[in-house]
Length: 126
Image (cartoon, rainbow, N blue to C red; front, side, top):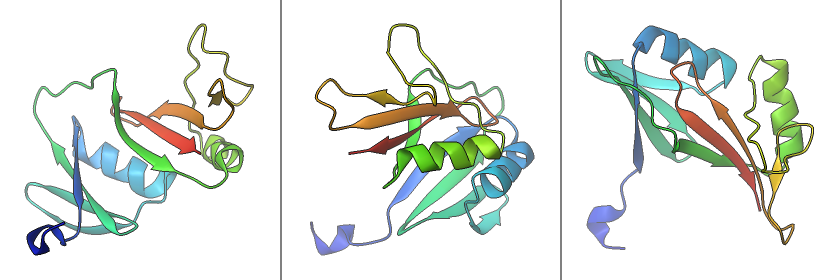
């Protein structure tokens, strides 16, 4: 990586309702707000930033927008369920009772959920 690319990574996420989304990420997921301006909000995601911007008429896509690799997916799913997060279950995927899918070789586990704006998010454990 060049010296120019050594800065802090920033991911971008779009939402319909900024206030609702900020409250959900801050209060439900526990992601700390680092700062905000008239155009969006920065959240601290470990060593990276998440820039959340509200766009008029914005609508979510069916594909994951953001995800986290976690060391204990079952514990993380249970903790988020206790905070009111509903996990997605897809027909034919063979997910367990928590909504966790395990890859055929058993090496990876993934669970999906949506934020307050309908963005598809994921947890994974390898």
